[in-house]
Figure 1: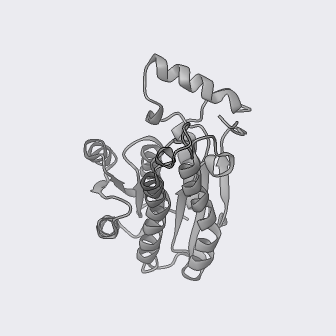
Figure 2 (figure 1 turned 90 degrees about the vertical axis):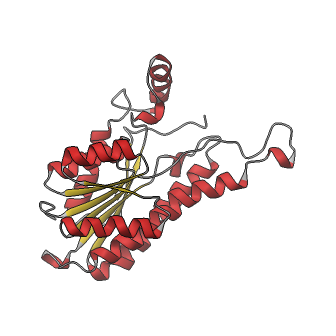
Figure 3 (figure 1 turned 45 degrees about the vertical axis):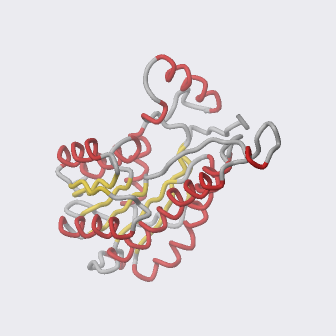
Length: 258
């Protein structure tokens, strides 16, 4: 699928994996709508790549529709990449065994709401917008890339909420692809491993922490780079025979319990 002259939406697009994806899409000629809640970063990036910034919570249907409509003004919407998400680390029970110290249920619901419900919300609305575009070769109208995590398969201690949410994104992949095949929309999911993004912070302590993280990576002996994720996202968007797949990008890592 040729994305030159088309529009794209990237949620969580102001930083990290999303930012790298925005740059990769723009580099291939797409006009990108950066969807995020980080106004300063989002506006600056959108201006740099000749796109637009749309402030939107991915669970807010009205805000997401506004972002999609903005994309439609830039060109036919062919690409959507869902990078927005939040993390959380809490053990299921507390040390004292009291009910009060058990995992906060509201926190669990919040992680599921953003990472899983938010992803599906954007998918259902983006696919609706894509379905109204003129079909390309083989009846193709567009492609969606969702973002899961290695935690969907190798969830560590304290990751019950996060792993549940990302496992749900993995589970969405095939039924979404089957649902959307009738209108020529492909769906794939990337499950990134340990990627060097601002989530780990900066400075000496952050570097020490990242050095420990890479212990489970087979090769190369480092964390992944956002640009490597973006390259894979671009391939999944443009390779018209890639559909209904979940692909790990993790240097062969298999995470230990902690």
